Image 1 (cartoon, rainbow, N blue to C red):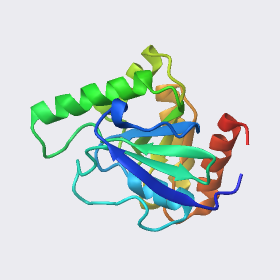
Image 2 (cartoon, rainbow, N blue to C red):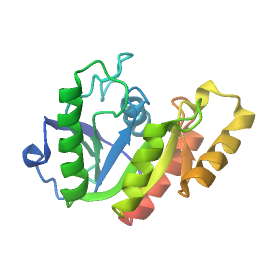
Image 3 (cartoon, rainbow, N blue to C red):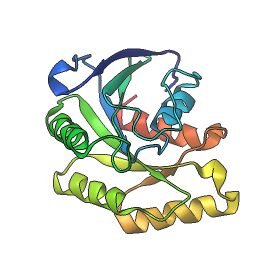
Image 4 (cartoon, helix red, strand yellow):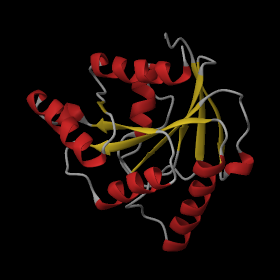
Length: 191
């Protein structure tokens, strides 16, 4: 599968405002500042398509991106640390839950976890929630550029053993890793 184009479609506060694009959708979930926007930009090889920030909690809406008319990336607000009120975080949580449980277009969830740290409690809770709700998913270990190359496969194996899911390393600079993720997406959508 070749990714030739990618474009931002819309930002929506909740499921009911999300348009149906009649394409399989991959929902990106992870802690605030785990690198969801960087992931989109590197996978589609377009710098700046998804807005990146050093401030956790910047993504407040469901951001949809059409990838080569083959599938959609849905960049979701991060869970965990964010400089917003508890009330706002609870509203995000409700909106995300509705989206994840009721969005018919979802082909798979992609849970992004920071490879530089042990799995955090809220990552574990999210993985358990996904499993409990029987949602298709796989894990992407982000920020592998910041750990020694010799440790990348060890970290992925450790995550796989803990979460009992397939784990793929992601790099902002090494397309070898990212090609494996693209192949996984292609297998899911049958391309």
